Length: 298
Image 1 (cartoon, rainbow, N blue to C red):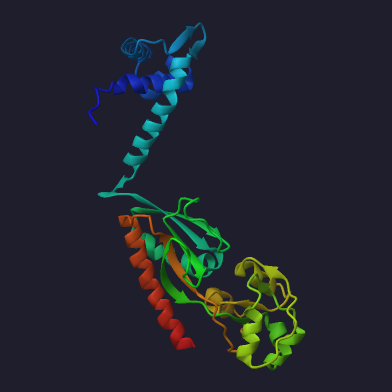
Image 2 (cartoon, one colour):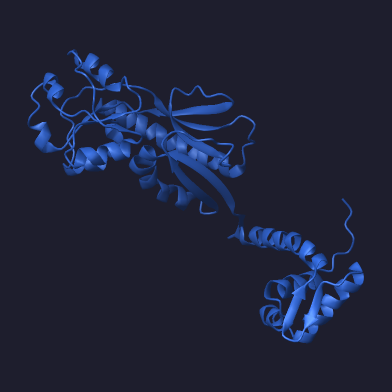
């Protein structure tokens, strides 16, 4: 597209004057004289053949023509400023929008983000959390890390690692549990996936009691309830290693049930940017370390 000569000084003077409704305040912002701003606006009005302001004794009143021009200029100047701010240390800063299921974000990703920041300081990571129900397109995400089986429509999914579930509770409750059968007398906290506890009892080779515990949409909230002594949570121990390491939580039995893995997902229609590729490679390396460590523990 061939563009005519753009009177940038005049456009900038008009945009500042329109925000302040004052040539004087615009001049202070632009570090020029009030007369210079007024002159530039006059030149723009002559070029466009319209009046952009009505000059009043105590300021300016923007005309319909000026109001029509202003939004496009503000958006353009904002985009230029944003682009210039992205240059840092010889790199163009890239933005990466990532949605993460809350359990993984708190229990695994956040403690590792310092390493990513150190290796890729020119990537601006925008992180949002969810309860595993996320619309990548609607939220404008580059990636989403989800829990499940990896089969999502129109989604490219790369498996990171399994996250087997196990019973977790406070020590005072654990002391009441001598065998898996004793779990039938406890309040069993659960997620919206109703078959998880039944599968756990199957793996423990004991009959499953009626499951009537509180239903949570987040393992983080479920474990918080367990920490308060409300009951026994069924959650991935590797996501709560700090609580287990401190002794605040206990895993009373080495019984696990696997209901899926964590996956790095993106829309198949989404082209992979350099920032996305860097994050994928870094995350894949971290996930392999986690998988290797988990295999040693189990």
